[in-house]
Image (cartoon, rainbow, N blue to C red; front, side, top):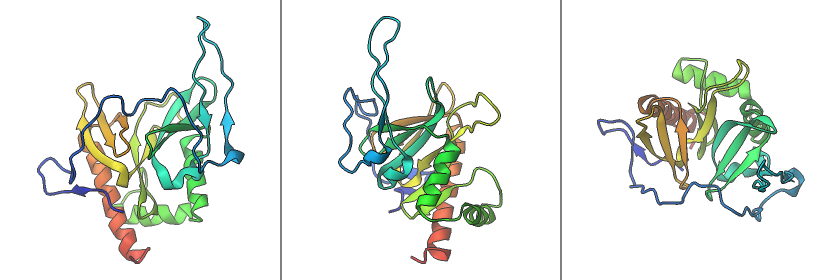
Length: 220
């Protein structure tokens, strides 16, 4: 699968298919169901805690990202009040789950699940893009994870970048408050700290990596 983009328009990457935001999409559901293909060994349900006014907080389902390789849309780093630096996984059905690991831990786990060598991937991508940092992570033809700046880190050891599946991006919209908004094929939206132009540049690099790996590595 290849993202539905073309590059002939004057404003950069444009989706081939129109995408319309429908009200209510991308919001956290009131009731969360464990998917039929879930892996109970990795499933944890957090304890329901009460806020100061006595109201219950929503239960958060936590799973490991590598159990959702086939439906992964984006990995968003965020600070959880209980677990600290962790990730929110955006899935193809429009739902989200929590991975209690940092973005670095999630990237390593995804690469291991695909039995790939992280160092070799970085060398190939870095050589093609002529740089060493903020490189796409090509795990499969339909799973090119593009790094995008999604937050301002609180410490020097925390990453500012999340990951977006290139094949799942439908539209990039400029935000008047700064940054850009990604419209995903799952109906979700993601805010990035980077400008629309920077986001489009990163997505274009992901497309270059896709074509390079398709011809030189995957042989398809």
